[in-house]
Length: 64
Image (tube, rainbow, N blue to C red; front, top):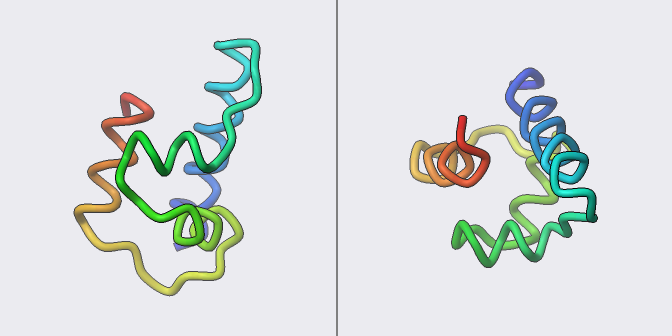
């Protein structure tokens, strides 16, 4: 699970660099329909599983 968590954080940081602006979790939450608190837990590694719909939404948002 740690690799997925690390990748999600890396993708957000990479997008910040590409767009030359901060990308807050709330922006990701609004765009994906995932609660900000859930995104925070995913990035911090405090979740034990990520369901397929959440993973799909994140992949679409980050174009991965």
